[in-house]
Image (cartoon, rainbow, N blue to C red):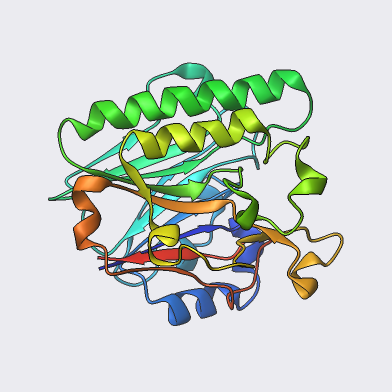
Length: 254
């Protein structure tokens, strides 16, 4: 079973070119999770909304159209689907959708960006705390896999220019400390589990400076797996050859 996660930075724009077809062809997912869809289901072409053999489940922003949004596409019909955490200020931006399978919960999250001032950073940190509490509550039922754009690089190895970004959101001590908390709670950063010393492995590059051409990037996209499920994970990969967004997909194979 292969699960893929991708911040598409706009599903409708992706649908207008061949990147969608190459993504499905080259990653061959059984389940895939999208972030920053910037669309509700009625705005998405039918071919994108319902590709062959997949069912799709969207959580879209209620505060602004064309903003945020997540989706899960699955060949395997989930036992149940959840939309949000039950907390209005976080759920109304369409940042979480989850699918229950026989042996685990899969949570797909688009974590907030901490830019645009201290209020937004505070929102991001509170979202972090609420999400971990929510995941831990679900974990009492069955193990958790969560994926998505976490919007933070964990360690210096996870971005090209750590010293220059020590005071920038996405690499602030308090943001990185939350990932430490996730790991201390018993979630495994699957990519680092299989590739502990791999450098220059990034998932996001700034479009405006053409940073991908020079591989000046950040690893912002993750699959975290509850430790009790980690024995079933066979590989974790960054799909750096997939284009169409300022992020590339990441994947795990069970």
